[in-house]
Length: 167
Image 1 (cartoon, rainbow, N blue to C red):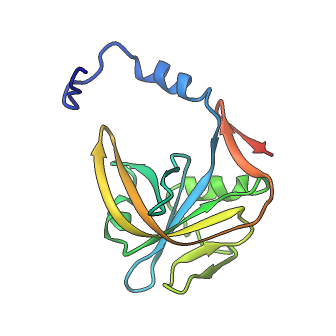
Image 2: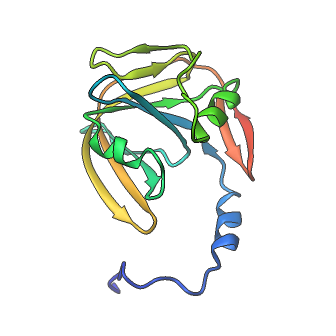
């Protein structure tokens, strides 16, 4: 088996073409939230969420190095991955934008550890940070799931640059 060299960039794949090819794969849409010391809340829309292991229960998500919330998530003692319902596209767009207070007028509760859990989602995963990996232009966060809940509704998806409903 050939060894992989993470330091050699791929020159054969144009980044825009690669992005368009990736858009052919429908993904779920999530908002990762956390509470920082002092009570400041942070949240960001992501679609790079995946299960890693059932035993122990582990999940992963990734965030661009350039994300304004990177330092906050690197410092957070925990986070919640909120899987959005098909009627929450506006919420996804709100947490994808930078600037304004993303939690203003948003319905959420605080978990026993004080992390924001968004209302109306199809699932949420409360995680303790386990590990981080720097890969390319992103950081991969692996979380140990301490609590999860779900509500069987239609999920919000993202496909070819648009939000879709996933049954």
